[in-house]
Amino acid sequence: MHCVEEWYNVRIEEKGVSIIYEQKKSGGEANIMKKIAVAMAKGGVGKTTTAVNLAHGLAESGKRVLLIDCDTQGQVVKFLGVKPKYSLYEFVKGHDDKGNIIPKNEVAEMARKNLWVIDGGLKLVELKHWLGEQPREVRQTILKNELVPKAGTLDYLIFDCSPGWDVLSVNILMAVEDVICPVALQGPAVEGLKTFFTYLLSAQKINKSLQLKYILPTLFDKRTRQSFEIFKQLKKMFPREVCEPIHYNVRLSEAPSYGKTIFEYRKKAIGAADYKKLIRRIAEDGK
Image (cartoon, rainbow, N blue to C red; front, side, top):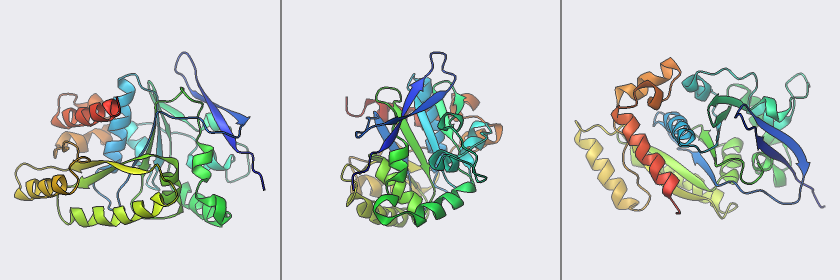
């Protein structure tokens, strides 16, 4: 059976006020410069901190970024100090839980100049349940087909993923090409990475363009031998993928409580300098 896919033409208004999704019919897919998932099987490694500061740093450099929260905790909007009315649930389904039609342009919230967010939150539980009920041949690529902006209108599409493995996780890995994997330099860090790697290999059987592009060491504490040992181990295992580490930094943990990124809260903090290195690497990659 031939299926005509719907995709949404994203128009960025001249004043940068909103992202407008205009429903169109098309048999092809528009290209996004970079589609990135910030993912790891283990929690507490700095996924949301990385996703938010990466997205804002790229936006500050003039890139147009859409950041999507795929965690039921809904931390992204708290980190950015915004309160969207709708979430990814309404974006994918096209209506709220009462059946009221919700235009996609009302879901993406402008959080900063050049930066839009789609909230996650508890409604993702319902979304996962709904995705699981869809036909097996289409359920894994629903998110990919819903998030297809017109070529040239967005520079980055970034997903903040939850730990674990479920139907939404699979959808995200079908929708991206690059994965940033934060690895905390403490405890059984490498074990968490090995677990995630098995998830990735499973997803790569379907999404051939998917790759573990960046391994980001986080919570690097110069006072502990363990941080240096794990960092050395990661560099030996993944010499090309390992990025410069994000140091343990109190300012990074303080910033979200003020609804600010590290660049707004303490732009001279070591955490800001570390994330600038990551942003530079990603921005220059492939040039």
